[in-house]
Amino acid sequence: PLEFSGNTREIKLSGEAYFEVAENKKVPFIVNTGGVNIEVTGTEFIVTRYPYEELTEIILIEGVINLFRGDYSNNKKDIIQLKPGEKALWQDIDKKMAIANVDTYKYKAWKEGLLVFREDQMTDVVRRLNRWFNVDIQLEGPQLQNWAYTATFENESLEQVLELLKISAPIEYTIKRREMKTDKTFSKMEIVIKQK
Image (cartoon, rainbow, N blue to C red):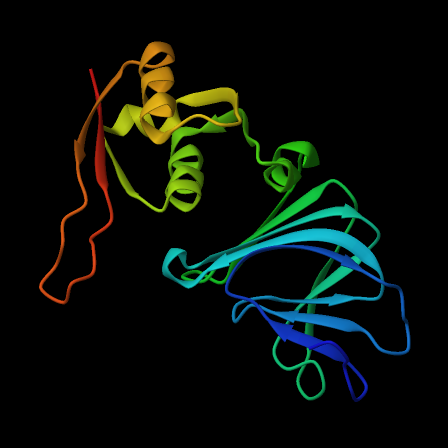
C-alpha cells in the first residue's frame, strides 16, 4: 500500500523483489513468504520466493534482518539474524536453512539488467535462466549438476546464452518451441541440456 496502518508494515511476496526499507524501529517491516518470514527495521535486501520452487532465498546487502517462522504478532519463532553479505536459503520440504557468505553484486545486478554467474553450479544457473527467460530448462546427466559456471549477460537472447554455455561446458541442448494450447494460451519453451 501507499501507506501502512497499525503496528507493522507487512507484505506478502511471491516472485523476486529488491527492498530498501526506511528505518522505523517502532513499526517493523515484515515480508511474509509463506516459508520463512523477515523482520526489518531499516535495511537493503533481496528476496526470491517462487512457490513452485519450494525454496526462499534471502540476500542481505546492508543493515540487519531477523528471520522467523509463524505469525509475527502471535506465534513468532525466531530462526536467525542475517548480517550483510549473507544469503539464507530455506528449503520448504525439509524445513532447513543454509547460511552462506556471498558476493552480493551478482544478486543485485538484475536491477541493472545484468544476469551474473560466479562459479555457480549448473542447477542454480538453470533455475535463474528459467526465471529470467520464463522457460523450462531440464538438466540430463548427473555430472552436469556440479558443473560450475561464470559469466555476465546483459542483452543476450536465450539462444545466445545457451551457445555460450555450450562453448564453455561439455553440453548440447535441444529446444521445443512454444505451442498454442487448446485454451489459446501458449506453453513455455522447453529446453533439455544434456552432457556430451
